[in-house]
Image (cartoon, rainbow, N blue to C red):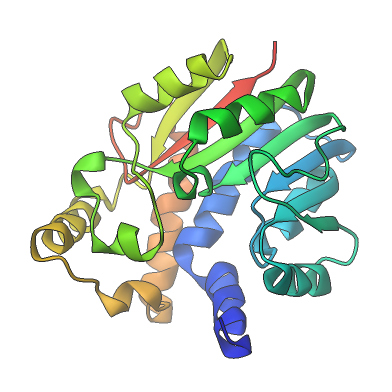
Length: 242
Protein backbone atom coordinates (compact mmCIF):
# COMPACT_ATOMS: atom_id res chain seq x y z
CA UNK A 1 0.00 0.00 0.00
CA UNK A 2 1.39 3.41 -0.96
CA UNK A 3 1.67 6.44 1.36
CA UNK A 4 -1.43 8.09 -0.13
CA UNK A 5 -3.43 4.94 0.60
CA UNK A 6 -2.47 5.02 4.28
CA UNK A 7 -3.37 8.69 4.53
CA UNK A 8 -6.71 7.86 2.90
CA UNK A 9 -7.23 5.05 5.43
CA UNK A 10 -6.56 7.37 8.37
CA UNK A 11 -8.96 9.97 6.97
CA UNK A 12 -11.64 7.30 6.46
CA UNK A 13 -11.34 6.03 10.03
CA UNK A 14 -11.40 9.55 11.50
CA UNK A 15 -14.25 10.98 9.42
CA UNK A 16 -16.44 8.16 8.10
CA UNK A 17 -19.70 7.75 10.01
CA UNK A 18 -19.28 4.00 10.54
CA UNK A 19 -15.85 4.14 12.20
CA UNK A 20 -16.78 7.14 14.34
CA UNK A 21 -20.04 5.59 15.51
CA UNK A 22 -18.38 2.24 16.24
CA UNK A 23 -15.90 4.05 18.50
CA UNK A 24 -18.78 5.72 20.33
CA UNK A 25 -20.36 2.30 20.88
CA UNK A 26 -17.08 0.90 22.22
CA UNK A 27 -16.69 3.89 24.58
CA UNK A 28 -20.23 3.32 25.82
CA UNK A 29 -19.56 -0.38 26.46
CA UNK A 30 -16.36 0.37 28.36
CA UNK A 31 -18.00 3.01 30.56
CA UNK A 32 -21.05 0.87 31.32
CA UNK A 33 -19.36 -2.50 31.78
CA UNK A 34 -15.89 -1.70 33.11
CA UNK A 35 -16.32 1.75 34.62
CA UNK A 36 -15.35 5.30 33.77
CA UNK A 37 -11.71 4.65 34.63
CA UNK A 38 -8.62 6.32 33.21
CA UNK A 39 -6.00 3.87 34.52
CA UNK A 40 -6.80 0.62 32.74
CA UNK A 41 -4.05 -1.43 31.15
CA UNK A 42 -5.31 -1.93 27.58
CA UNK A 43 -4.19 -3.90 24.55
CA UNK A 44 -5.64 -3.23 21.11
CA UNK A 45 -5.03 -6.29 18.95
CA UNK A 46 -4.85 -5.30 15.29
CA UNK A 47 -4.68 -1.52 15.62
CA UNK A 48 -4.19 -0.71 11.92
CA UNK A 49 -3.14 2.91 11.43
CA UNK A 50 -4.10 3.63 15.04
CA UNK A 51 -7.27 5.70 14.86
CA UNK A 52 -8.95 3.57 17.57
CA UNK A 53 -6.09 4.22 19.96
CA UNK A 54 -7.02 7.86 20.52
CA UNK A 55 -10.37 6.78 21.92
CA UNK A 56 -8.87 4.00 24.05
CA UNK A 57 -6.32 6.34 25.63
CA UNK A 58 -9.21 8.03 27.45
CA UNK A 59 -9.37 4.90 29.62
CA UNK A 60 -5.72 4.26 30.44
CA UNK A 61 -2.36 3.12 29.13
CA UNK A 62 -2.64 1.55 25.69
CA UNK A 63 -0.41 -1.01 24.00
CA UNK A 64 -1.13 -2.35 20.53
CA UNK A 65 -0.04 -4.95 18.02
CA UNK A 66 -0.22 -4.84 14.25
CA UNK A 67 1.31 -7.21 11.66
CA UNK A 68 2.50 -4.59 9.17
CA UNK A 69 5.63 -2.63 10.08
CA UNK A 70 4.69 0.02 7.50
CA UNK A 71 1.26 0.52 9.09
CA UNK A 72 2.85 0.65 12.55
CA UNK A 73 4.83 3.72 11.51
CA UNK A 74 1.60 5.67 10.91
CA UNK A 75 0.07 4.36 14.13
CA UNK A 76 3.12 5.45 16.13
CA UNK A 77 3.26 8.87 14.50
CA UNK A 78 -0.37 9.49 15.46
CA UNK A 79 -0.16 7.93 18.94
CA UNK A 80 3.27 8.66 20.45
CA UNK A 81 2.14 7.71 23.96
CA UNK A 82 1.14 4.17 22.92
CA UNK A 83 3.47 1.18 22.93
CA UNK A 84 2.88 -0.29 19.46
CA UNK A 85 4.75 -3.41 18.37
CA UNK A 86 4.73 -5.74 15.42
CA UNK A 87 2.92 -9.01 16.05
CA UNK A 88 0.74 -11.64 14.44
CA UNK A 89 -2.12 -13.40 16.19
CA UNK A 90 -2.39 -15.90 17.73
CA UNK A 91 1.21 -17.10 17.97
CA UNK A 92 3.34 -13.97 17.79
CA UNK A 93 2.21 -11.44 20.37
CA UNK A 94 5.08 -9.43 21.89
CA UNK A 95 2.83 -8.70 24.91
CA UNK A 96 1.93 -12.36 25.54
CA UNK A 97 3.68 -12.40 28.94
CA UNK A 98 1.63 -9.45 30.22
CA UNK A 99 -1.88 -9.25 31.67
CA UNK A 100 -4.44 -6.61 30.72
CA UNK A 101 -7.61 -5.13 32.20
CA UNK A 102 -9.05 -4.77 28.70
CA UNK A 103 -8.28 -6.30 25.33
CA UNK A 104 -9.99 -4.92 22.24
CA UNK A 105 -9.97 -6.36 18.73
CA UNK A 106 -12.20 -4.35 16.42
CA UNK A 107 -13.10 -6.01 13.13
CA UNK A 108 -9.96 -8.12 13.20
CA UNK A 109 -10.66 -11.80 13.90
CA UNK A 110 -12.66 -12.27 10.70
CA UNK A 111 -9.30 -11.79 8.95
CA UNK A 112 -7.74 -14.72 10.85
CA UNK A 113 -8.33 -18.34 9.87
CA UNK A 114 -8.07 -19.81 13.37
CA UNK A 115 -10.27 -17.36 15.22
CA UNK A 116 -11.00 -19.67 18.18
CA UNK A 117 -7.28 -19.90 18.93
CA UNK A 118 -7.10 -16.09 18.85
CA UNK A 119 -10.02 -15.80 21.29
CA UNK A 120 -8.32 -18.38 23.53
CA UNK A 121 -5.14 -16.30 23.44
CA UNK A 122 -7.06 -13.15 24.38
CA UNK A 123 -8.42 -14.96 27.43
CA UNK A 124 -4.92 -16.00 28.47
CA UNK A 125 -3.67 -12.39 28.59
CA UNK A 126 -6.62 -10.96 30.52
CA UNK A 127 -6.37 -10.26 34.23
CA UNK A 128 -8.88 -11.93 36.52
CA UNK A 129 -12.19 -10.17 35.82
CA UNK A 130 -10.59 -8.49 32.81
CA UNK A 131 -12.73 -7.70 29.77
CA UNK A 132 -12.56 -8.47 26.07
CA UNK A 133 -14.37 -6.39 23.45
CA UNK A 134 -14.55 -7.75 19.90
CA UNK A 135 -16.50 -6.54 16.87
CA UNK A 136 -17.09 -8.59 13.72
CA UNK A 137 -19.26 -8.46 10.57
CA UNK A 138 -22.59 -10.31 10.89
CA UNK A 139 -24.77 -12.50 8.68
CA UNK A 140 -22.83 -15.17 6.72
CA UNK A 141 -25.65 -15.11 4.16
CA UNK A 142 -24.30 -11.83 2.74
CA UNK A 143 -20.63 -12.83 2.52
CA UNK A 144 -19.77 -11.14 -0.77
CA UNK A 145 -17.07 -9.72 -3.01
CA UNK A 146 -16.63 -6.88 -0.52
CA UNK A 147 -15.67 -9.40 2.18
CA UNK A 148 -13.33 -11.26 -0.16
CA UNK A 149 -11.60 -8.05 -1.22
CA UNK A 150 -11.17 -7.15 2.47
CA UNK A 151 -9.56 -10.58 3.08
CA UNK A 152 -12.31 -11.81 5.39
CA UNK A 153 -12.50 -15.53 6.10
CA UNK A 154 -16.08 -15.23 7.30
CA UNK A 155 -19.00 -13.22 8.57
CA UNK A 156 -20.56 -14.41 11.84
CA UNK A 157 -23.92 -15.53 13.06
CA UNK A 158 -24.72 -14.84 16.71
CA UNK A 159 -24.97 -18.58 17.34
CA UNK A 160 -21.57 -19.29 15.76
CA UNK A 161 -19.87 -16.50 17.70
CA UNK A 162 -21.35 -17.75 20.98
CA UNK A 163 -20.10 -21.28 20.27
CA UNK A 164 -16.59 -20.02 19.49
CA UNK A 165 -16.43 -17.93 22.67
CA UNK A 166 -17.41 -20.98 24.73
CA UNK A 167 -14.82 -23.13 22.92
CA UNK A 168 -12.22 -20.46 23.77
CA UNK A 169 -13.07 -20.80 27.47
CA UNK A 170 -15.31 -17.76 28.05
CA UNK A 171 -18.30 -18.42 30.27
CA UNK A 172 -19.64 -14.91 30.83
CA UNK A 173 -20.31 -12.70 27.81
CA UNK A 174 -22.90 -10.64 26.00
CA UNK A 175 -23.31 -10.40 22.22
CA UNK A 176 -25.09 -7.47 20.62
CA UNK A 177 -26.06 -6.51 17.09
CA UNK A 178 -25.34 -2.98 15.90
CA UNK A 179 -25.74 -0.98 12.69
CA UNK A 180 -29.42 -1.90 12.83
CA UNK A 181 -31.19 1.22 11.54
CA UNK A 182 -29.39 0.94 8.21
CA UNK A 183 -29.67 -2.84 8.08
CA UNK A 184 -32.12 -3.11 5.18
CA UNK A 185 -30.24 -0.95 2.63
CA UNK A 186 -26.83 -2.36 3.57
CA UNK A 187 -28.07 -5.96 3.65
CA UNK A 188 -29.72 -5.47 0.25
CA UNK A 189 -26.53 -4.02 -1.21
CA UNK A 190 -24.40 -6.86 0.19
CA UNK A 191 -26.83 -9.44 -1.15
CA UNK A 192 -26.69 -7.78 -4.57
CA UNK A 193 -22.88 -7.90 -4.41
CA UNK A 194 -22.99 -11.58 -3.52
CA UNK A 195 -25.32 -12.48 -6.37
CA UNK A 196 -23.43 -10.52 -9.02
CA UNK A 197 -19.93 -10.84 -7.46
CA UNK A 198 -18.81 -7.22 -7.66
CA UNK A 199 -17.83 -4.39 -5.34
CA UNK A 200 -19.36 -0.94 -5.00
CA UNK A 201 -16.68 1.75 -4.96
CA UNK A 202 -19.01 4.20 -3.20
CA UNK A 203 -18.67 2.10 -0.04
CA UNK A 204 -15.03 3.11 0.14
CA UNK A 205 -15.78 6.83 0.18
CA UNK A 206 -16.93 9.24 2.85
CA UNK A 207 -20.54 10.30 2.06
CA UNK A 208 -21.43 13.95 1.66
CA UNK A 209 -21.44 15.80 5.01
CA UNK A 210 -25.22 15.72 5.48
CA UNK A 211 -25.51 11.97 4.96
CA UNK A 212 -22.32 11.34 6.91
CA UNK A 213 -23.77 13.19 9.92
CA UNK A 214 -27.17 11.52 9.58
CA UNK A 215 -25.74 7.99 9.40
CA UNK A 216 -23.40 8.73 12.30
CA UNK A 217 -26.27 9.96 14.48
CA UNK A 218 -28.42 6.93 13.64
CA UNK A 219 -25.73 4.39 14.48
CA UNK A 220 -24.45 6.35 17.48
CA UNK A 221 -27.94 6.32 18.99
CA UNK A 222 -27.93 2.52 18.82
CA UNK A 223 -25.53 2.36 21.78
CA UNK A 224 -28.61 2.92 23.96
CA UNK A 225 -30.47 0.04 22.25
CA UNK A 226 -27.82 -2.68 22.08
CA UNK A 227 -29.71 -5.05 24.37
CA UNK A 228 -32.80 -4.78 22.19
CA UNK A 229 -31.44 -4.77 18.62
CA UNK A 230 -32.92 -7.86 16.89
CA UNK A 231 -30.41 -7.79 14.02
CA UNK A 232 -27.63 -5.68 12.54
CA UNK A 233 -24.82 -5.65 10.03
CA UNK A 234 -22.24 -6.10 12.80
CA UNK A 235 -21.87 -7.96 16.10
CA UNK A 236 -20.15 -6.81 19.26
CA UNK A 237 -18.97 -9.02 22.13
CA UNK A 238 -18.06 -7.99 25.65
CA UNK A 239 -16.70 -10.96 27.59
CA UNK A 240 -15.36 -11.31 31.13
CA UNK A 241 -12.46 -13.46 32.26
CA UNK A 242 -14.10 -14.81 35.39
